[in-house]
Length: 206
Image (cartoon, rainbow, N blue to C red; front, side):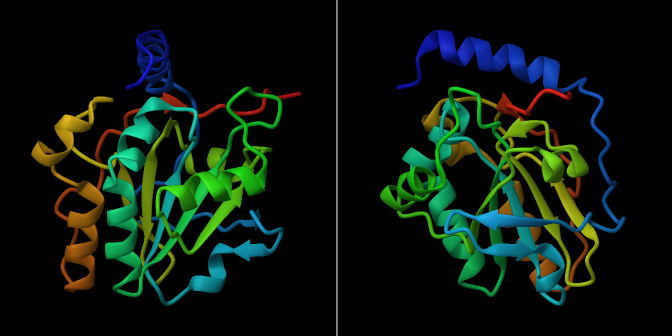
């Protein structure tokens, strides 16, 4: 059960995040390329997956909204549904190293494994370069890149912006719905939605 004070703090962060001046590519535009290290230290480049659908998921286990979707099994199931159909799933953590929420790569990998989450890769973005390139504002914040390297979806994981796991069955999973349409060769009917969660804990600009 999320700590009430933590939830309130994250709710305030969400309001601030909504007005953050982060440059973000629009749906239909080229998705910014990046190279990040995964939790095993291997370099992973987004453009290496050209020709496949790719989900980018901004995450932070210290956020109760993230824990809602992982502890309930919702995000692990969504990841499995996607990767089982040939979709690449990249979980990105842009939490700066100095923040209390930061987890060292082995601990982050272990946290996900404990929840039976098996993304294609878990990427470390402590400098925040990839997160800022996408305008990622919250954890979670999700994007889908199409096989041509264009942004096909940007927004929240679902339609009910709460930290309560009981809301999950009543919510529309926007990411799954978008993938269903894309894999069927259809346009995404809700290509842009409002993300919700805690603010991304970016490293302060020097």
